[in-house]
Image 1 (tube, rainbow, N blue to C red):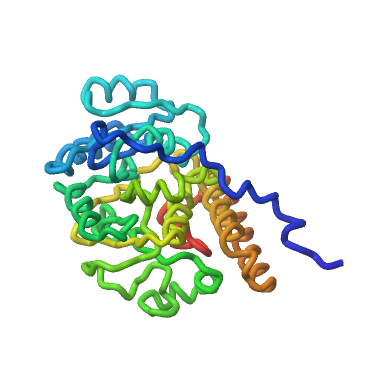
Image 2: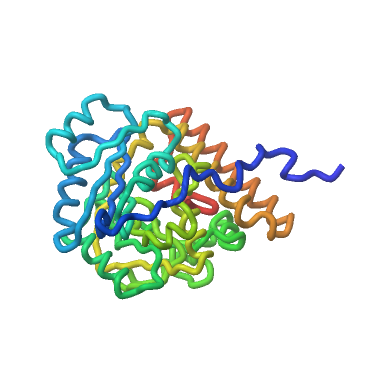
Length: 332
């Protein structure tokens, strides 16, 4: 009998599961930028730091801020209404995932530009102004991300990436990308050979802080809700890139990623969804055009790494988000 990975793996979700396409916006209601923040388990102090920074990040451009609350903390809505009356607060207790919560606000937004922002990211002063300015002078730029630093000052390497092609996935699976992180050949996923201070066209940025041109999003649709909490940003970049839009890493704009995320509250679900997203992305975008032996190696690698990560999480020894990202076969 000839075995096929299609026989032993769960059925692939539908090709796309959008809740809708971006509607047009009346010019009288349009703003320069719509910021969308999803909140689950981050502390009040962390979210307030994010929102306070947003107030100073757009001083020259009009801005609306959506916070979509996933309903875990009953005290959170009252705090937002009292201290941040300018914020548009929405509720999504459905637990359908990060993509669905973001889409709820994206479909209601009025911005010429759309900023996905994690509630544990602190923007530098004028960051939104400078990102919008960049888009204005680069009309083919459909999506861009800033220089995203971790709390310890190191670069969050997910903020500038290549797509995890089968070859790049194999480099990560075999450890060659870790051995030669600055190689233009083996280190292509995290682009370790590029200076941090150098603006560059990139295939993907990270959804923790990602500005998207509304026209570009209208071309491809909003986030794919097949992804629960990882992979949706990479998938969006892939579709935007395929539609002919450019992606850019813009290091002149700074932001800090604290990574006090809700994923630490659900380590088993986090590990499962991380590798599930990797599986969906590879099977959807690369499996059909990849030689079967390579497909087997990559899929088995994802299953083994994912199974080990889930077991470690069950045993209380799960990795954090950063460790998962760095250890990923394909990366999300």
